[in-house]
Image 1 (cartoon, rainbow, N blue to C red):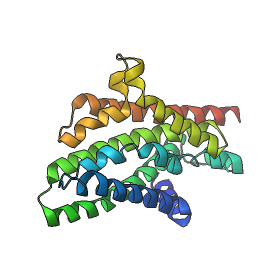
Image 2 (image 1 turned 90 degrees about the vertical axis):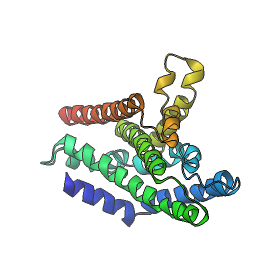
Image 3 (image 1 turned 30 degrees about the vertical axis):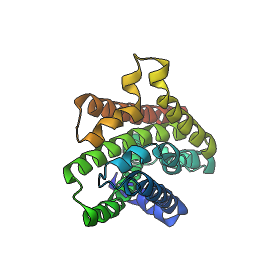
Length: 226
């Protein structure tokens, strides 16, 4: 699995994908940093993530839409799923590599924390809890995006499915109060207050594991058919 992770992380930076993801994300961070924090004379670093959490909806597909769709379209999927490595290790390797890119991007956001240290005393613990919640949200999004990529050989279709699903989750609370607790973006709101809520933690992890397992099942069935 580690060989897959190394290969996938390397591929993100040997192609424009990794740079586009990090560049777009940090560009939006800079805009929201100025509007939501500097504009209000605040030193609350966590306010930044209230806004950029919505950006994940549109940038995560950059990382995930090619994961399996490109393999299928180029014809290398057959080599992938018939290789000595297990389907589980392949899926986990691709998933972890995308999470690593998000982690690298999160580390870059500490630049904004450093700027705030010059002007005041931002709360480090609250900032770390917020970033942890943001990582959980990103992992949930990556798992679904990876699943969508396993369903089609068209990267664009995979991206559209992923974005469409994420946007749909925004409106879950207005569609049904029963399903409101499962709105991924709304669950993140507690983390910037410095609180790690067990319900949100379990839901994020369960969602992530569910779609990783579904991706494995899809690929396993395709391997069996072939």
